[in-house]
Amino acid sequence: MPDLDRIVRDIADEMRGRTDRGEVASYIPELARVDPGAFGIVVIDRDGAVASGGDSEAPFSIQSISKVFTLTLALGMVGDRLWKRVGREPSGSPFNSVVQLEYERGVPRNPFINAGAIAVTDVILSGHQPREALGEIVRFMQFLAQDTSIAIDEAVAASEQRTGFRNAALASYMKSFGVIDNPVDYTLGVYFHHCAIAMSCRQLAMAGRYLAHSGRHPGTGLSVVPPERARRINAIMLTCGHYDGSGEFAYRVGLPGKSGVGGGILAIAPGRASIAVWSPGLDASGNSHLGRIALETLTKRMGWSIFGV
Ligand code: GLU
Image 1 (cartoon, rainbow, N blue to C red):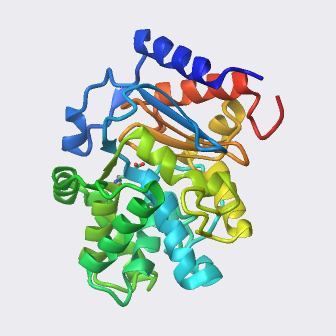
Image 2 (image 1 turned 30 degrees about the vertical axis):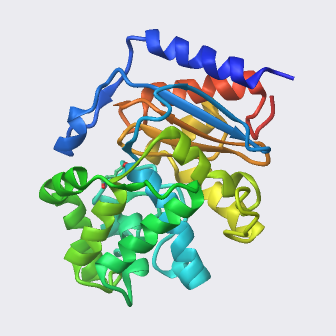
């Protein structure tokens, strides 16, 4: 049996010394202030044992990783009707691409590209005030992580709200096709704020555990989603979780995963573990450079790729 604690510590040591760290996202000005030298990793196994290394307790902006949780909430609210509003095919396009939306008449390819996540946010918002919808999302994260200290980083949310013109374009364009029900500003406000939730690797790995355990929340024994839905969310994470880098992530890591431009990645080893890594420098597709390398090492040494050892 490989020694998980040892492997996680080795990975954190190796990543600390690396100089190839990618580029920190700067299109959201507040994110550009983050230390590019940070690295954290947490693995929580089936029994709840935690293996951690590096900056595992430091909160960072989870950004698009929040889309896994908003997808879970929206499916809980409207079930399979969600798939009328958004597809579930890999996009092969950058996360904020406008061009694909025109070809596909305002229906986004999947719930993890920005357009798709904005459409999913709109579903959660319907029938609520933006503040209520956001409260629901944050409380869901707090419940999953069993930690009421999880909160939105208002400086990051405001920074994106001031500069998120491309997301505003995507939302307006979808609105013109009737894919967005609520006022565009409301939907975008909720979207920017849930992307700005700050969490540590430990909190994120805790929150992802239901996806590793057939939809059941190991902390409370409660069912978050039925097993079939957990399996399907994992499938979408595998095929769409890293934008136009999803194929490369599957090839190298071999796990369902979701990245965010804050440099975090949540990865799921089904039946085995929930894993969170964080390193703010990104590769050309907007995915954490060292985060991906760390996960590749972890899955190789543990034999955890879903495609075999
Ligand atoms: N809030 C970010 C945006 O909409 C999320 C992108 C990401 O993390 O990939 O641009």
